[in-house]
Length: 153
View 1 (cartoon, rainbow, N blue to C red):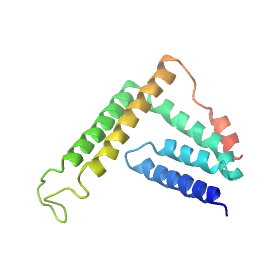
View 2 (tube, one colour):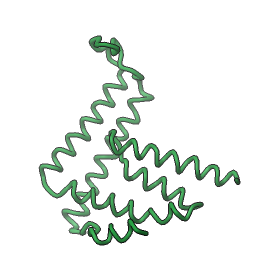
View 3 (cartoon, rainbow, N blue to C red):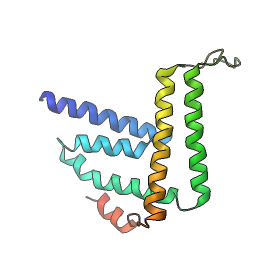
View 4 (cartoon, one colour):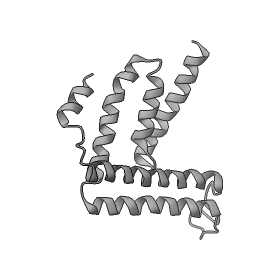
């Protein structure tokens, strides 16, 4: 296996794994999965074939996330809460001791807080883009039929 292919596998695989974690943790999960598949797609045909399907899923999720003002408000508050948590984590405050936690936050400091803040800011930027694209510009998300056709690809 060539060094280039090893690099593609390591980078693309890492992006996909972090993206999967980002689906349940604060972070742009589908965006990272898409980035990982784009990297893997430079060497593997199976990954290139899934790029369009993941892109369509991400666009559909973005459109659904800005369908109502309540969703937009909740998403905005959630992203701001993530940024605030990152700031608190960066400051490494003393917290009340509870079970195995305290008196310091685990892994506290700028090394942990900065990526949390960046994740929240990315969420706000993506939210703004989704509002612009699907509410003001009026783009339509990919249809169910298109998603089903691409999933079989």
